Length: 174
Image 1: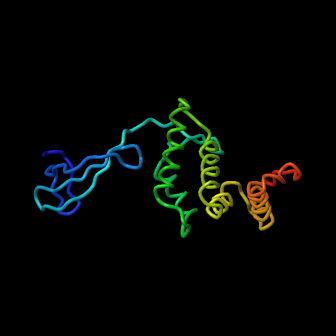
Image 2 (image 1 turned 30 degrees about the horizontal axis):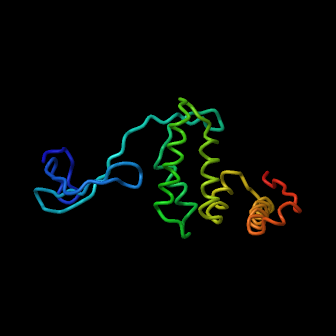
Image 3 (image 1 turned 120 degrees about the horizontal axis):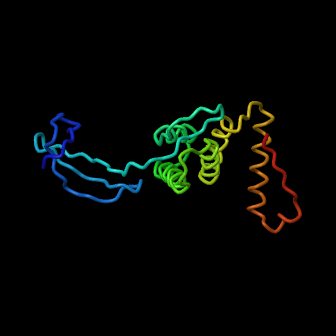
């Protein structure tokens, strides 16, 4: 019964009991608890703390991988779009897992950005464009339009694969 957790309702420390345990969406453990003092129920999540590599920024500086910062950036791109929170969590978990599998102590931040771009392209094209404007440095209406034209061409080729041999694609990114 003593676990060191602080009840989010009454603030009592170390007096909650576990009612239920199961997996969560981020490959961790979710626990349903009840405070022994006030009787309120609340959820907690446990995840293993993994050592992720340092990210090498474009200016040569280094920064620790920050899962929450990545989620925040993706959520901003997905604001008011039909993208479920679980899809964002899954994308970030996949990125984290990929970084872990690389087994390196440092990775260029571009690796993470490229994975976000590809993930957003699969989730929602509007969110992709929002993110791409910043990430790819699309600083003019013309460059944004070229990126949109590129996406429309890719979509057309996917929708009509029989014509894909007749159309030659070009990469319009700056």
